[in-house]
Every structure is written in C-alpha cells, then in structure tokens.
Length: 410
Ligand code: PMP
Image (cartoon, rainbow, N blue to C red; front, top):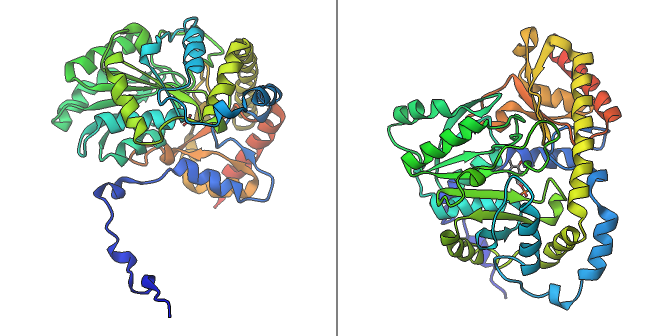
C-alpha cells in the first residue's frame, strides 16, 4: 500500500520566511486578471500597455526568423547580449539619457530592475520615500524586501522635493532610498522639474540615499522639451540606480529592459541577477538589438509620439465634452497616463466603488487608492490614453459618465 504523506501535512504551519508577509501582490495586476475574465465589451483605460497597433509585429516576425538559431537558444551573458548592449548604448547617445557600456545590465523588464535595486540596497525596516500617488508595483517591490514606506506629496512638477526635509525630520531618520518616476509619472503623468532634479540629487547626497530612478516613459515625450535625466545631471553618481525598459516603447511581452548604474556597482548587479535568472531571454534581446540596428527605433518612437499626443488630446477633449467641470485632470507632455480628480458633488463618489459600476457599464480604469502606498485618493483615478483609439476613448468616457451618474444616484 502506498502512503499518502500529504495526509498529515498542515498548511497552517508552513515555515514561511518573514519576508513572505511583505509579498503584498499588485492591485494593478489583479485588475488585469479581473478584466481578462470579463466577456462583455470593455473600453480599457486600466492597463499601461502600448496600443496593439503600436507594436511593430511584422518587423518583429521578420527579425525573429533571422535570430532564431541555436546561438540564441543557449544561455547568454548575465549582463546582456553584447550586440544589444552595443546597439542600445549607441542609440542612447542621441537622447537626454546617454550612458556607457560599463554601466548597463540588461534585465527582464523594468520590474526586474526595481527588484535588483531593492535587493542590493534595502534591509528590512529601511525607510524608502515613495511618491504619492505612485506606481504601487514599484513600492510593492520595496515592501517585499521589508522596507517601510514614507509617502511624499507631488504636484504638477512631480515629487515636491522641498517637502522632503520636513518629512524626513518628522520620521526621525533618513531614508535609505528615494523611489521616483521623473518623467510622465505613473500614474499622474507629471514630470519632475529641472530645479527639483538638482535638489533631489543634493538631498540624496546629504542623506547618502540611493535614488531609484524609474523611467519607462522618458522617450515618449510628445510635447515640450526633454529634460536631462538625473544620470545626465550627475554622470558619475554612485547613488543613482536607473531603471529602464522597452515595455512601453516596444512591447511589454518581450520582457527586456536595462539598469544603468555606477560601473563599480555593476558586478554586484550581475551577481544579484545571476542568483535570480542567470540571463535575460536571449531571442528577445536579439529581436530588440536587430530592431535598433536596422534603425527602426527612431522612426517607431516618432510614430508613437505623434499617435499618443493625438490620443491624449482626444481623451482631454472627450473628458471636457462629457464631464466638463465635474473633473480636473493633469495634462501630461508624454507617456501613457493622465490623472483625473472628481470635483464638487462627484468628489463624494468612491472611485473604488465606481470601478465596479464602471466595469458593469463597460469601461475600466485604475482607482486612486490602488496607486497610493497608503490607499489615499479615493476621489481620483488613472486613465491610460495610449491604448485606445479616439473613437473608443469617446465611448469609454461616455460610459464613465454613466457610471458616475449611477454612483451619484445610488
Ligand atoms: N515602472 C513603471 C513606472 C511602470 O509604469 C512600469 C510598467 N507599468 C514598470 C516599472 C514595469 O515595467 P516592465 O513591464 O518593463 O517590467
């Protein structure tokens, strides 16, 4: 007779690590799963995904055919495929975020970059400053290493850096890290001004705090002038850990990103990555490298900027037409998102409740509290303008108005 060993096992005494308590999951990602399960028509303003038509699929197919050979089916170098490192660094030389090969490590998207930053710098109990609102998948990464979060306010010029000294004084200890999304922030769409970039670098030095500079959207500016990256303002700065990704400019499913760190830190980044996954998906790296080599990225980005500007303007017009003074919004100069705050009577609506009603009406967004480390902003929500056509956007905003009317009457 075979013995069923599992019959005597208890799930209540599982010897979990202390850090398991900090694995809080992502509200953003769970809303994607919820949306995927819906069968009715939904206008999707929730996810930060590039428009389907914005992914250069035909070119990827052509390149994939070329790069799928035995050499791309074996393990690659942990720091990244040399051809991608070369092409990427050459491409970035012409941007506001230049770098050198001794600084770059290719990662599985931006999320792995955030994980590497926290793995290297965060001890349990360390204080990490996060923006309010913020990209909570990023703050969740810090929590997964036991960080304590200190939420700092933002305005139309990004993180209010001037407010940090008082916040830190009130906390009674200096932060170990400052997590910022300086360009077209997720979720607010706002951009950190140049004076604040300088101030932030100064404060980080005063506190010996690492700046985790998460910038997936910087190359997607469709209005105004590019600002120099933090790294461009402080080129040999050991306290800067820059996280980048191809997810928003090419396709998130490729899972290719990079981190840009001080050369002296790079071996530690590589060692940490070796302990996670040995190397990033090799064929995906070759697809990206070849796309850049063929000169496709500049043309592609130019097309995205034109299209996303049009989509952002169309969303603002739809909001103005359908909701008028019932809402205010930020007005991003790039990226994917705008942040909407309910006004007047409508401010009584809980956007978390509105989410359910809106879903039933056929429109999805991310409610404000899902984008705040402490669940604030129940009168606000995030809309992604990048993934829907202007016609669908208009339909979605009409549905949003209907959902708001229903909530007001409830
Ligand atoms: N940081 C920010 C601010 C993001 O918006 C995203 C994607 N939504 C990421 C990091 C994660 O990027 P990736 O999909 O490349 O892991």
